[in-house]
Length: 149
Image (cartoon, rainbow, N blue to C red; front, side, top):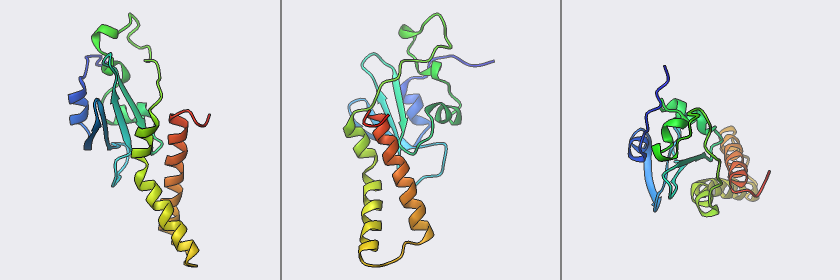
């Protein structure tokens, strides 16, 4: 049987690694769906108590919740729950500043790769893999803030 009991933000954050507060009601953490060195998961607590998740690494929020042993309904505060406990909450975008903060290391990856190419040095397979991952995260960030569709 599925558990629909409410999980407050502190309990959610306690299940994540590398959590850093980035502002009032905003955090960034490492995604539980993969082994990453830097945080790519943006977490935001809305004024009405809802939790918004966006992984700039490209994983779906539902997959992240599943990796934590949670579901969407558990993040809906009791005062906002509908009679239909299985209904998804409304999706909201993330402010551009949150996207830029999450992508700051990806910008460095792109800069290093560009400098190597300008210096006439080849990119190793690992460099290319990091560059492709950075590109995917940058594209995901553009989608999240509504710049791309």
